[in-house]
Amino acid sequence: MTFWILITHQLNSEIIQEYEQHMQMLAAKLMWLALGSLGVDQRDTIWAGSSAGFQEAQAAIQLNHYPICPEPDRAMGLAAHTDSTLMTILYQNNTAGLQVFRDDVGWVTVPPVPGSLVVNVGDLLHILTNGIFPSVLHRARVNHVRPRFSMAYLWGPPSDLVISPLPKLVNPLHSPLYPSLTWKQYLATKATHFNQSLSFIRNYLSSPDQIS
Image (cartoon, rainbow, N blue to C red):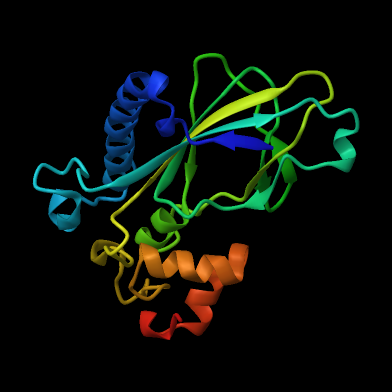
């Protein structure tokens, strides 16, 4: 797999800036739809900003290219992982390759639908909702007929913002599963424990101070 951070290409900067603006608005709307379905409102998320638009959110746009591979069963485009974000909004061309893991089924291909976007729940939204919205384990396979392109909008909070299960989703019957920690601290954990990071902070951490 090859990728480019397009923000460095001046020729495309206006297009990318416009795309980022639309993705920011879409991500904020999707976030409120997700949280609203759990009974969470703007008063429960002061960190979202004064107008609840998540103005302080941080994001990156990544364009991925998966070339044609003559032996796709012997190669992997992108290894299995969860995203260390609140959510990731993915556009893909009409070449299949994205797969998600389902516990009772195994790996399932996500067929590309023209004009559609794929939304992946990230690890931080998993923590915020106390596991109600689980982050999705996914990977990318290569294709022996056509190259595959995708554009990922990786959306998260400020790096120093403390993330923890939302108080409205915690009660005597549903205790908090994860300690409070910043995105920066979670990324440090992810760098060491990779896909076991959520399990690690749930089972072994009582305080973010334990993160080196």
